[in-house]
Image (cartoon, rainbow over all chains, first blue to last red; front, side, top):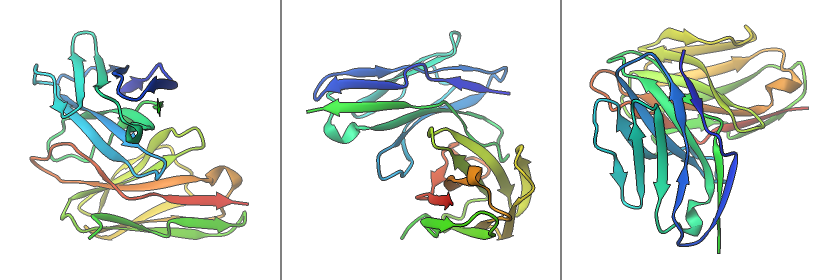
Length: 117
Length: 114
């Protein structure tokens, strides 16, 4: 079974600063996906960024980037030039790459990120 | 058009009642899920269905019964509701073969049991 650990229950930074959210995971799988999902107060789950384990290059999406360290089983999210709208719960998640299977996501407990004006 | 839609969004009911939450996806996906988010925001998978067939059934009380009448729908029926069932329930879907792994979530259904 997979486990995902987010060690920062809450973080607070000033607007425009850069912030890094930590995530580690444990798995015996060699092929998998990692995700960061954002859940604002509206409670909608929004995909922020996705990484495939076989790709060494770190994924980036505009102000969001990851630092994927496969050997260390670490997958941190960096948010640059943070904005008030980034205030949300952020969940790190793991999924086995099972082709057409129905494996779901295993989530960490989340980090509540607060962007201060 | 909402990709994954759940009804109702909010549900308040008394202990012992039976209730259902409906989910529909218009993405043509093969796989659908139910997740439970507790008061501490922890998200845990409950069930997954692939082409109407139950694939994952985590340790969930048998008072919870999912039903998938077709590939686009996955409903959740809960019997004899208990206080501990209060949570937000999310439906999600994912494409099958050659998918990107991404799950698409509904807006969640907040269930409050009094």
